[in-house]
Amino acid sequence: MLQEVAAAPGVRERAVSFESTGKMLRGVLALPEGERPPERGAVLLHGWGTYRIGPHAMLVKLARELASRGAAALRFDLRGRGESGGRYAQTGLDEMINDAVRAAAFLRKECGASRIVAAGLCSGANVALGAAAAAGAFERVAALSALPFQSHRSAEQSLRRTGGKLGDLAARALRPSTWLRFVTGRVRVLRVLKNLFGGEGGTTRTATGEVRNLKDSSRDLMGALAGYRGRVLFVWGGADAEGAGARRHFEGFAGEAGLDARFHVVEGSNHNFYSLAWEREAVDTVAGFLLGE
Image (tube, rainbow, N blue to C red; front, side):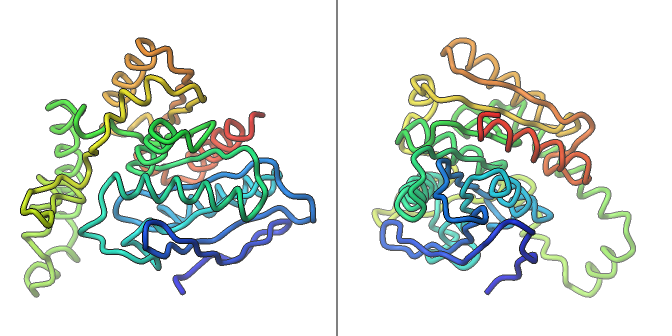
């Protein structure tokens, strides 16, 4: 089993599994102590290249915060990640959306929760928005560090993403440990270049020979989101290089579509809310919103 952080007081956790279109998905369910079934259930969705704990165990902390306030919280490995079945290189946005919908159904059946909400980080935010809009899986969605869906991403936003990665790469290049890895052949140059200019996920070839962009969807997700009648909270870090452009995109869209959306900026924070203060603000804001406090 993948390494987990020790359980929190007042919260009980157990390993769970459920099936999604032929793949077994595995996760951890956090529940409040006591026998009373929770009214609300929350599905927590990690980013593209991570698994169910999220960066610096942020999703673990969010799940336990929700459970301590009386909700059931399910964080699980999307297919091809962590302990779940499936292949990483063949899992795209549509498959992840299907997994999120199945997770919502699992929570209803397993816990008796009647009101299901979701939170996702980075591409997990896109998955949550897609599942809410296309399948009506969630009545509220907290989208942390959400980027525009790939088909709506502008050239400026793509350049900012590459620029942010270049800055990170330049910082690493100044470290002696990086040069030691480079001269000993432990730096995979082709992988670095692919991540820099191609992004995570990339493409795959279908059974019919067509090239498929894994981060794009066969659905009109923005069209579906325009008709979504739930509530959405968008959260970005104030120092996230892509956050300002993403916020302009979603604020403009929400205004035009009449989407019930709130926007929150964690001042000074990066994309993954690395400091304890940034993380605490994000977790408290998201938990309060999802539980209607």
